[in-house]
Every structure is written in C-alpha cells, then in structure tokens.
Image (tube, rainbow, N blue to C red; front, side):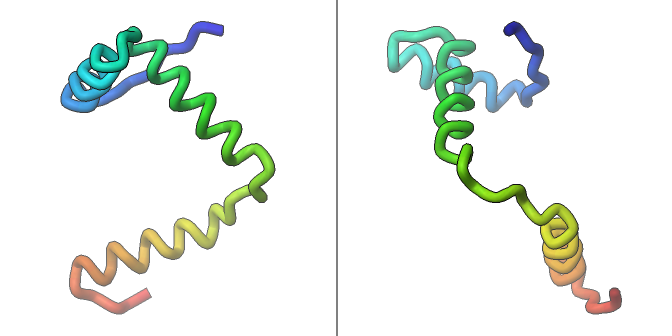
Length: 69
C-alpha cells in the first residue's frame, strides 16, 4: 500500500540523513520504523483516549500556570 505522510521539513531532513547512514531510502526507513512500532504494540491494550486527553489538558494548565478545570 502506498500512503502519503505530512511531516515537518526538519524532521524529513533528519530521516533522510538517518536513512542515508543506513544505506536505505527515507521511505524504506519510515516503513521499517512504523512496522517495528506496530509489531511492538500489537498486543498492547487500546489507549485510554479520554484519560490521555485529561492528562494533556492538565499538563497544559500547569504549563500555563492555572489550576482551574
């Protein structure tokens, strides 16, 4: 399957450099990274999306210096 991926230009440059150092193309390296991640998380339970959202909001509040919900 072919898919498009939007990525920051600085990140793209880093990926290209890492891929060149390994002697592969950037898309090959990205595919390998994604395949490795999927394999490593295949048996993991689904994330608690509401819990994650609450944690991110709490972290944003702390960073902003407020504590109101």
